[in-house]
Amino acid sequence: MTKQLLHLVLGGKVTDPRGVEFQDLSKLHIVGVFPDYDSAEEAWRAQAQRTVDDAEMKYVIVHLHRLLEPELPGK
Image 1 (cartoon, helix red, strand yellow):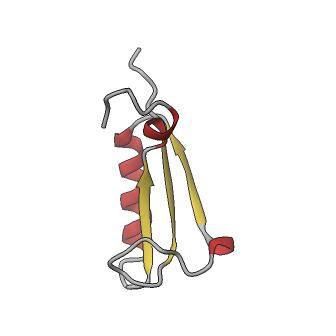
Image 2 (tube, rainbow, N blue to C red):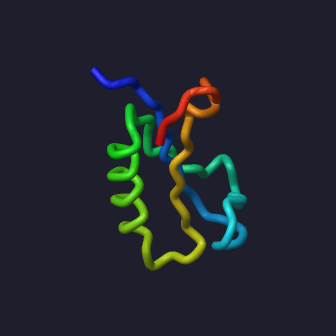
């Protein structure tokens, strides 16, 4: 069994499409928490594709495992 590396996928409208400052935190869309980068990326791609025509909408992957255990290597 491989080591679990938690990733969070979330999105929402941003103040500037070049950044990650969200307009309204109460309206963030939490897609979910995933056990590895590949499954997080798959979820991220699906959500990003659904909102491709909205320049203010942005989805991101947060590497939770890096926050929980910063000394561990991993994608």
